[in-house]
Image 1 (cartoon, rainbow, N blue to C red):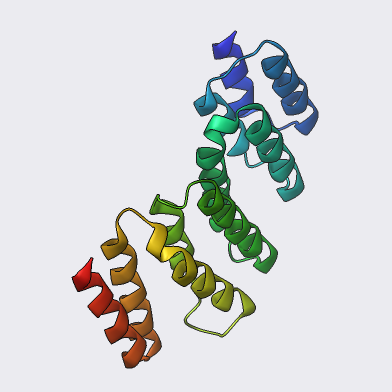
Image 2 (image 1 turned 120 degrees about the horizontal axis):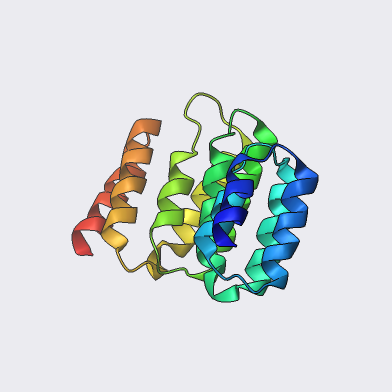
Length: 170
């Protein structure tokens, strides 16, 4: 059954078929998160459908919510030329951070979304989240190094030096 479901999740271009197969997988208690990630990555899904599936899966498989949120954030970040999708990406990385603030990946992915070309509202959200939670991360040095590089690239040498100092203390 898993092979059939994977084939549909991977290849279907019908949202209805994907939904029916999703329901079938949930009903049969299929708990393979990698299988559901294939569904979430199917490009036929609209942003709203992607959010709906992710939210449902994060409730059914709460022990995997962190991974699902990071995965969905990554999918939305690939569509970041659309400002709304960038906001969605940030939102899912933030959800992942709240789920497990010690893991580095969502912070690093957030920082990659920073727009150096123009000052957009998401830039301040990215910095606020990364700076306010960075002390909870296991590998603080990695986050502080990335924040230092970001501030260096922005031309804020004072903040860059502050994060370089914090990195050296970590």
